[in-house]
Image (cartoon, rainbow, N blue to C red; front, side, top):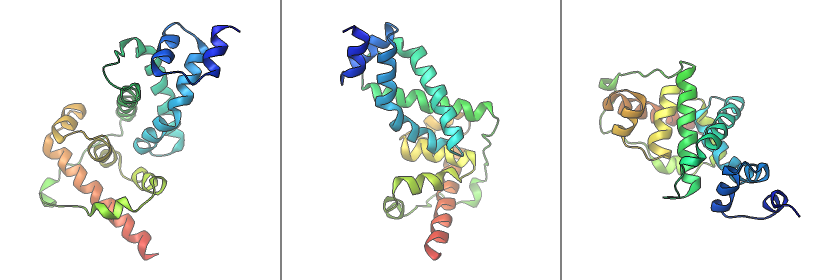
Amino acid sequence: MNRDKQIGNLGLSDEMLVSGCLKGESNAQKSLYEKYKVQLFRVCLRYAKDRAEAEDMLQDGFIKIFTDLHQFSFQGPLGAWMRRVVVNVALQYIRKNKRLQMNEDIESIADDYQTDASVFSKMNVKALTKLIQKLPDGYRVVFNMYVIEGYSHKEIAEQLNIRVNTSKSQLSKAKASLRKMLEKIMVN
C-alpha cells in the first residue's frame, strides 16, 4: 500500500498531515481539508453576507493555508492558526470588494451600552449566524472580530485601519441591530 493511501485512510495527527501537505501529498491535503472544512466554513459564514460568498472565502482561505503552511511552526494548535488565516482572508475579501465602510457616529451611542448576552446565548449557532449575516459589513466584521474572535478594539482598529472609537461604535451598532432583529423575531 503506498503512503498516500495510508494518509487518506488514517486519522493522522496534525503534525503528520502538515508534513504530508508540505511534501505535496494530495491525500494529506484532502485529509487536512476534510478535518477543518466545517469549522472554517462556520467562520466564513459569519463574515460573509451569504453562503456563496462564504464558500468563496473558504476556498481562498484554503489556498492561502496551503500556500503558507510552511510558516506554521507548531507554537500553538494548527486549527487556531488556520482560523486566523481564514479570518484574514475574509477581511481581505471584504476589503477587495470595497464593502467595508465604517460609520463613526459614536456620539449617538452611549459609551456604557451593554447588550444582554443571555439573549444571544439562548439562540442556536445557525440562527445567530443568519442574523449576523444580515448586518452591514462594517458592523458584521467588528462584531465577529470582537465578540467571536476575541480581538480588542485596539487590535481591530489596527487591522482595519480605523480609529478605536469607530470600532466601539460599530460594535454597539451591531449589537443594537441584532437586538432589534431578535425582538422582531420574538414578537412574531
